[in-house]
Length: 249
Image (cartoon, rainbow, N blue to C red; front, side):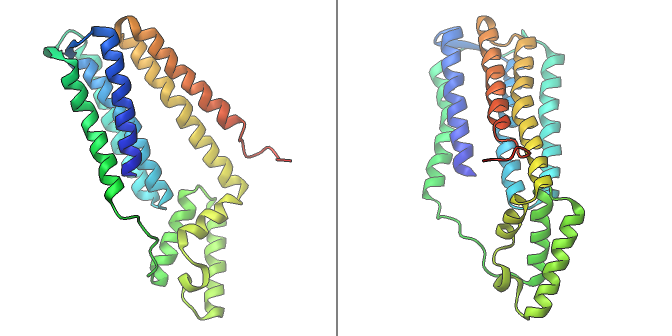
């Protein structure tokens, strides 16, 4: 996750620096409202990485809580920027190279740290209670129907009673099993497809609308907004070609 966050910070920072140079040259006035919108958009991108990591880890409660917090902060930042309006500056004539360093260094540091961290290995010590709890959470996080989740849990409990071994010994890692079962469930795959498709499509459209209404990029407002609209169209087209209800030949 650190590597992905670092990569996104570096990539978004590089694009932002390029746009600042094109728009304002080598110095820029830092508009507070524009900075709030930019920070909200950045938080939305990084929040998606965190939410996806929690989702994959089979922690539905943490995913929901984090999504509520991130969504509230993003909306609060946008609302504050809208109420404040443009024309209020945190600083004037700030050198763009100085801002570039401030925007790029965090991402580069995270990339370096992620490279030096030891590779994470799957946990191998589980009590049956912990295993069942994480397995159930993994199924629910992958949007498996509740009735199907109960059926799988009951089936595994019966199998463990007959086998007389631990859940990990009999079935392996709980999240791996949950992932494999969810991959074969059409309802779960369809739910995940809708969730990811709507998120991947609506998020850039919302960002484009914010950029267009706030006119935060001056002469570049329309091209930048259109770039986000294009990314939404690409995301929708890619997702549509992989819709789960179409039988593959």
